[in-house]
Length: 373
Image (tube, rainbow, N blue to C red; front, side):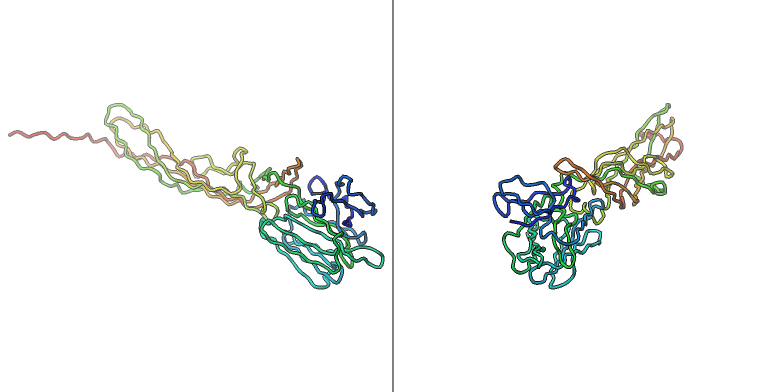
């Protein structure tokens, strides 16, 4: 039977709680904080549990509010127990429980790699006071890789295989001192979706729009009649529209993220137009589309005149800071947010203006007849 210790500081709304059936068909939990024995027929308690003994100073290192996730794990072992465990997060910060003493082994997760199996095993031996320690850690990922560190004298009863949920680790908890007395991983429940919400662009007022128009059509207009005529000048251009919100070194690296918000755009037809945020809509976090855009301008041509029309468009590019909240919706119905910021890069294609040049009177076509002498 595993040796487990309850930690109420880990929020069950967001992190997995139950043990899997890796040890037996009817797995059980015994030796909680008060070392109460629970029979294997009892319902699995919904507690966040650390594997090991009941000694040491309790600690909680969970980075849910920052969106940071585990990227690297290193552990040190000596004889019958694990002496130290250090966990690095996606923002470069780390936390050590126990001490860096003994032989070590480490594992680095690749971007987007998630846990599929986990065993946090209590030591087989006990201290002079009768307390277990952490004895082993073993994990497997969705990339087919596995890693483990094992002390001596392990026993099958010490195995603890928690539910790995989404496979994304947001931190660890347990107790330690000279050794690692107990350890648990804070693993997110399965994720339904991830969205950027509450998006703002604090420096948008200072961004400059395109000032040099691009020509899309040039056309001569001839009105040989005695009354004013209306013509349409039409120009087309293939344009590539890009939208991208950069991501930080955090949870969103492992997720397909959408954006629910407005985007910077320019609607005016003058070089003096300014960037504005459009209405809220849903976008992919990074999209590039190529489309054919057409612009039309009505032209009134006076009688018996020849005009020359030049139609233009503007291609506005922007790289500006954004601030937002990343909202993580879990499959169990709970959600949470954390603040993110980065750079929005995009391109906006808009209509320019039409310039009319009067070339003078229209020249009527001459009909050449047969000369007679």
